[in-house]
Length: 520
Image 1 (tube, rainbow, N blue to C red):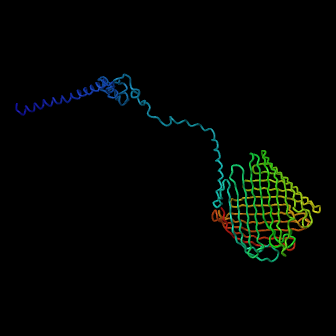
Image 2: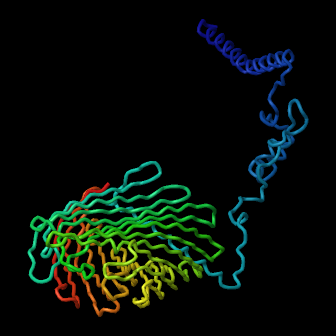
Image 3: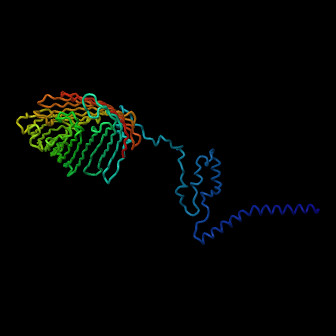
């Protein structure tokens, strides 16, 4: 054998031995690896080994022969069958989940129809849907040009000052040709409104002075105001307190002035009242007592002497009872009875008559509110007044009051006022006067800060027993342009006319003015 042949033979033997060693090494290594964890498990008490259902050992020859004999492999028919019949290495029981089939072979899936409830059979029409709810009434927007007022504790004060200039064609309101004059007017206002949980305080005071540059005798003041306090004693009982004031002047041609006078004599009217109101379900009872005073300033005659008017000063005491019943929330009719007495400071006037008198008045009326567009109060009654002097006949007549507010649109407001009352006079032989007045005012907002107002007034005064009558009328327009909450511009024009049966008492006047108003 050659040397090359020996080398090849030795190489073949070595290769065979190496192949046999490689084939035998995995089994020896696997046995050694299984022995080491088992030894560690015995020392630590842990379960070792791989379960047969996971390791899937080689099946026996007979099982493999049976599987080969089947036309369809068992793994394809039921994949879980490979692990269902295997036993665990530690426990003989099958695992609770892995030993069961996930899904039966006959179930191919779950559809949505198995979870949906069957639809009911419709045998009739469904009930009609309820109507939509009524839209809620939108709250009125706050006026961006309204004054905010000044807070004084729980009371709000609203002061205002207005300065104007203008022209008056008849400052003294005299008959015949007159001399016109420019004038300046200063006016102040103060409004009061409380913000208390109970009780309420309200009031308004206004005063002004007109100064004529060419006719100083025609310069005159004017003022009016009222203050009301409501005290809530109980839920159904309220105490009402009120005060009032009015300052005016007499025109030189008035029939009550028996002589020609210079200037405009001042008259004062002021008073107070106290009452109590009690509610009995829908029935409301009110008892009110009042005291009113009238004072007249002495007039200066054209010859420099004074004309005393002290005989016209008087005090009136009155007691009133009123019963109202609320038929509906917007309709409350009432009946009212009143007794009063008027006592003059001087028992006998300048004409020799005793003017003190007693009066009795009965009224019926109602307050109403119709759909928030028409609100107001209307009353009508009859008054009988008897005088201390037997020469003066009783003064009888219809009396009444009306105040109606109509808002046809959010931009337009119509106000109607009327009154009828019996008054006093110093004309010899006359028992008194019957005064009737009516006024109409229409205000329209062209813009939120621009308002145009038209107004007219008519009044008639009849002097009983003398055949004397005076008709007074006015017509005009007013413009109010609000710049801010604080400043506004006002302009107005008024035409006045008086027709009287007394000679030399008629007059006509035209007044135009423009001014700036400052309010807080």
